[in-house]
Amino acid sequence: MSDADSRRIRIRVPALTRVEGEGALELDLRAGRIESLRLRIYEPPRYFEKFLEGRQARELPDLVARICGICPVAYQMTAVHGVERLFGCDPGPRVRRLRRLLYCGEWIESHALHIHLLAAPDFLGVTSVAELARVAPDETRRGLALQQLGNRIIEVLGGRSVHPVGVILGGFGHAPDPGAMTALAAELETAAEQARELVAWCAGLPLPEDAQDFVTVALRHPAEYPMNEGRICSSSGLDLDPTGFTEHVEEFQVPHSTALHALLDGRPYLVGPLARLNLNLDRLHPEARAALEATGLPWPSRNMFHSIVARAVEIHQAVLEARELVLEDCARTGNGEADGVYRQWRPRAGVAVWATEAPRGVLWHRYELDGHGRVVTARIVPPTAQNQARIEEDLRTSLTAFGLDREPAELRQRAETVIRNYDPCISCATHFLRLDLERDGERIRVLAGARAPGGG
Image (cartoon, rainbow, N blue to C red; front, side, top):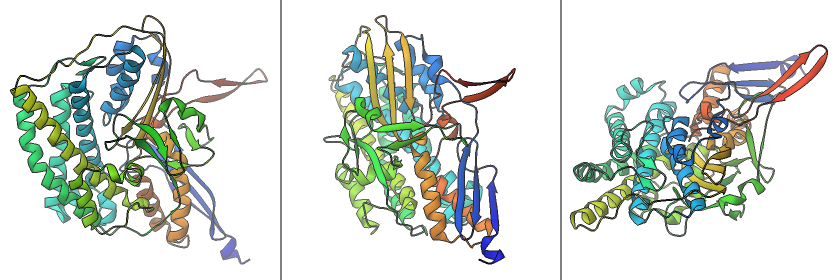
């Protein structure tokens, strides 16, 4: 082996850009192979789960909304659905429709933000949304308009677009304003065409070819594209109620990260829009399915770079569903047929478990409550933590296929592009702290009493 073949190259990405939170990548190459790869998450744990202990169940929607400023609805929906099932509370069909509409708003704003501010610049050779606006001004304006529409949907139902306060156990604090709903219906009509155009634009980007073998995990609903209800299913044959999640998913700590990793039956797995779309093509709205088929891309897809297309398809899906949900609610309200938006509930001791589809993937909650409705323990497994092991596996595969002999700047750019495919919410994935302490010659290991939850 020559000296050139045996030399060690270290590539450090000390600060990942255009992602939520703070992380870094360390990559060591030797003899034409990856010797070590570490996706470091070094943000301090937030201990949100521990903060929830002793709080009343009715406080959960407002508290968990603070976990993530981009995906507060996902945390609210997962908590209220689980606790309402435990308490035997069925808020009724109107609340169910309005909650799905609220979730549509979050998908629209989150996906539009990621596509235009974080991901698309990678494929067009620019480094920011400001540069994107110069090379694709109309497309950027369209993307920001869609994001603002998503925020307005959240505001109409939640009272405000960030950390909304309208969701409560049993339903909503108040019914949506009829005038605001009528205005949304008009906006959604225009947005449907914008979203269809977005699908075509994302599919036309110069996306790398990078087929891989990976397990996908997502919710599956009998009749709907999965959002706030469903069973947890996988491409490997898994099909279970959310209560069985921990029988197959193992979380574990790695030395180089404060974020927990997760394996499904011993293997890394993918959650998020690409996983959802791969497993739920037959649940798409007919117009969204037609827009996807018009791209000519093969689906299901094994190319992680198609995640940007999957997000665009889900924006189209969410806009189409939101339009139908708003029109139905407006019609029922106009005819005097609208139900109330709140049902009474009584606390009950037991365990509440639920999973929903945050924009970034499956979000799983478990709460143990006492007979007074107080939280005894809480556990939250966010999508980004579930994707950690898959991201590292993807980096190894993608960078090797890309060519490890390339210049460090090229490898760094490809690595960041791979990571941004997952839209990681790094702050929200910092779960756990282990402290190794030596005192008076005695080594003490202190394990934190709680895991801190993560974002959508």
